Length: 480
Ligand code: NAP
Image (cartoon, rainbow, N blue to C red; front, side, top):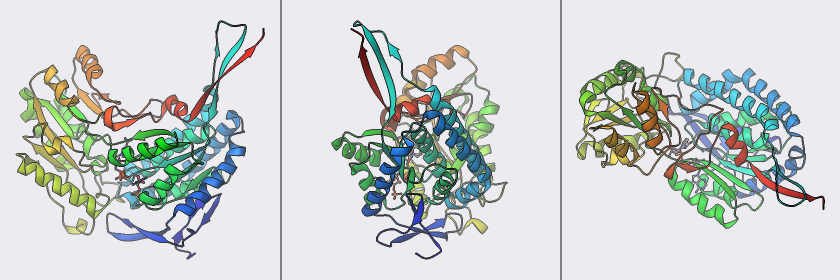
């Protein structure tokens, strides 16, 4: 294997793909090639699952306390290498360096959370009618196959890897082909931290072959997937054949609902970050701005002013707030949606174009606000996954809830109002898995994260992720 090729991680070693194939990954800010990566195939998935099954014999047998200690060492090593990992993420995803550093902070926190949580997650003794003791045990599943997207590559992989390992499973991960670099380095650090060779394997390669081989592999007990609803539905169908456990984190079309009594200054300054961060490539992006008619003009003006002034730039500059889209194809998708929006009656208030100058070599697109959108228009129904927000107006509270819920998705959202009773009423009425009130923040290591409706099945984070990574056994010991 050439020294410049990033090998797969299988059984604790960096190795070439069995077929010797490679693929290039690029920096979306410049379109320059960043690295060449070994491209796994079905045979490599077999090797990785075999290594994972062998490692499970040791890792799964350790006490939760011991696994927690290993994970604490891993967290410390990731923290030590946070700047290196943040730079990899910044260059491969085009994520502004400040945001990438923030992601690394969460990654370390999540590993520490599960390192500390796993010995506090246990079965119960249960009162029953017969004489004896009924009890439950939490046991690992075995080999967990993970498939992840390109928008927050390391953070999302870590959300899945940390609880899977903590619970005693071993892992084979297929990262998105566009962004494999950070998780390959992270897997090396896991080995350096003393997590047994084979407990975490990483096999980059095409979703259609590597992802499919993982989903169909008889040695894999669970699939954890994050990505599009379309691919997720196909994975669920194929995993059903082997009755594999499946969790799915899928697409979104989340609402930012603004009532006339909200702090409109705060809405104007902060709410745009709820859609334009990571250039809108966020499953939680509040891409529908649903505003009460009486304040719509004022909110659109304030919100658009912030959007206009967001610093679009090279991701490695600490000043940059919005980097490029991930690929030329993703930018074309965004441009096509804006075009459809205009044809269906929307109006561009700000953005709607590529920046030029030093940014013309990358896949940049300006933060875009589309006004005069109705909730039945394409830009309000489909996930654009780019820096575009659609403004829709409502009359009263019932109207706001109806519009916000009129979507096949239900992942995230924000609600802005100073009325405490309304905060509770509307928060309960919205059919969404995650919600921030008077804030864009709603994701924490400690709280469950996941979608309603077509946004997914199961939860990441919190103790719920440990539940999804374990089997629950009931044992009755008779004393009769
Ligand atoms: P995607 O096209 O569904 O790909 C996701 C992953 O699935 C990639 O690793 C991909 O591999 C793999 N894959 C593709 N086809 C496959 C197949 N037939 N069998 C098995 N695996 C397959 O999604 P994406 O474009 O990377 O990410 C964007 C989507 O992810 C958006 O819809 C977004 O909302 C969603 N997302 C959801 C969450 C959440 O937590 N709910 C978080 C982030 C993103 P390749 O890269 O090789 O194609």
